[in-house]
Length: 603
Image 1 (cartoon, one colour):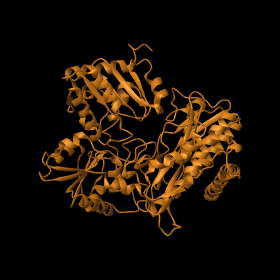
Image 2 (cartoon, one colour):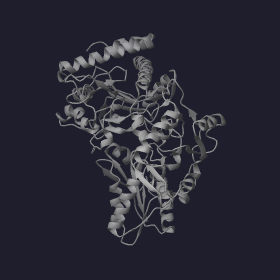
Image 3 (tube, helix red, strand yellow):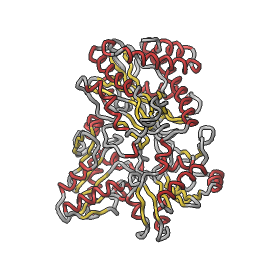
Image 4 (cartoon, helix red, strand yellow):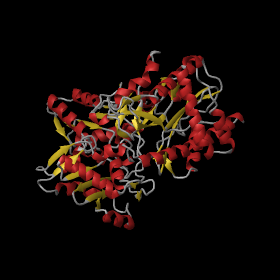
């Protein structure tokens, strides 16, 4: 494409014009919003608007005459395709590292020049990184400007969809109880106020849900808690009068979302404010009175909501069964259509599977955009079929489907790979090694408090033995009718911190993979619940945890290379399928029942 006519060209030029008008020589654009969200409302998708790169992670850097996008290996092929002809440089990173964009910027600026970022969407950690880099280069660090305000003339407004309550029985703890728990933590920290900006924490504390962010049942808001009351900063009209009255009964008053900074500035001069540096922006930090003392610590609610109660775990099991029934109905229909000779596409997979989930009781929405990748598209971990770019499921090979649903009683996330026709020896070897990694982690027993990244190598070992690896993490935390990606635990190649300690009740994905660019991809994913185990040594070596597999859906045995599986691994697989059959048979009938019985035969 001619870069002179590419849509990104005019947008880059408009932002660069604003940089010159603001006397800024460079600007840093994170994939972020005022709440440090992973999935962004359209208003804050500045990086995607400017460049056209739609990956869920990545950073953009722009100077008065250059522009670059920084993306890790999960997105290289996608970014190359979406940036083609834009004139925007793609900087390939082995892992997501925002400091690469910072270093790119400071290397192109001269001492005395001005480097900016929008404090309203800049996390405190990144702000410190930028400030230090500017100091080292002799640059002026500027955080009060947003060149997109004028350049992005059709920028969407604030989302303002209705907010509703998450009610019993699925809501297993009252709003008053959750506020009391947060206040207890504030006392332990010595804080008089606690500012919460992360949307899932706000929703969890108040037992509220919304739809301002695609796939995540949250709403755009800040929450300020003190010893007597809480202030919810939310767009006017999102909460109706009846719900506002119930909130007031629990000591929660409403304020306009736009007034958050002003009301923070009016806090008492001796305020002691607890905030999470990983979940707060520089803009809100700057709004606090200069005399206020700030305590930086993880949000107490982040730790609390990661540990599902026994009642919540019971609801999650029920949601998994409902979701599994939907999967059976879909796969039975899908295979029947193929057998009849219908030509199906990746888009059809998304439509048919979503329709089956929508029929289930308690279904609210998908938990993320469905990934249906046929052959080479399956090698793109974050691929999404679009009307303008998709593949038909023609020929033979492997179809990867990564999908999930939001239910009143839980959040699901599952990946399966299915053999379409015959498979090659290499495909079967890849599939089996990934399955072995998934089984190995599923069976792991470990001491309570183990830092979650320490478990990562267990799933990778069967792939490492064959000289293979994958570029993404093995597992992420999952919310309870909440964000499909939830912290603080993460099973990944990461430097662990103390908050990643594995505790009972945590739900984590288990999704090793293997990807051959241009050929096919394999990923098999279940969700796991941390459960306590009796300690045979009478607790001498501490409490032990194990994983309970929550996800209920058959694993395709057709692409397994039997010679690569040990007897104990086959035993695990057969035991898993026996559990799936037992749990799902009461929920399916007809073709779905027949499919379930066929796909859970002992291997």
